[in-house]
Image 1 (cartoon, rainbow, N blue to C red):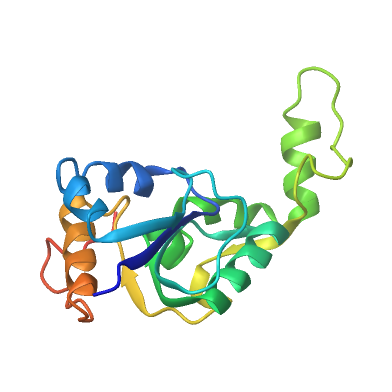
Image 2 (image 1 turned 45 degrees about the vertical axis):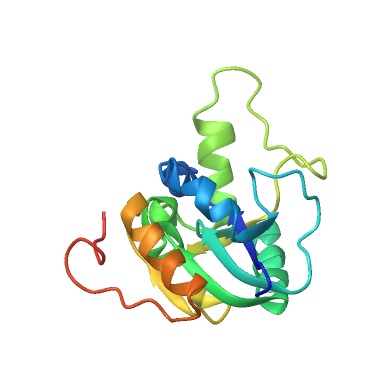
Length: 181
């Protein structure tokens, strides 16, 4: 049997979902025997590869870089898991939405809240251009599996990955496996 090509992606979020992934502890050793981690904040891959079997996508879509990345991820991945409440609903990341569009958010953060040198950074590569609204991943690409939680527990993550390793679509039911917040 071929090894599963696994990726994880971190968009607009706090990295709590990735920390929960690390809470798989010793099971990570078993997992490493069954998958090739081909892209992740845990790896040194610079470009998202072709032919990914499963990708866990953490975070909401908050800027143009996220939008470009998620489109590439969807094109190059067979199964996309919306990983955590920010990816599933926008959650905490979307709390900036009531402040208005991108320009008003930048004004609030870099001018009104600044103590020294109030300036909105405009040099390329410093702040990726913000989208006017932070939105969950499914607003832009097709999602195959939703894994809620802030963050999802290691048990939830393991349940999903074990099913996928067996070639099955995970059945998430019950409070312990489907829980927001």
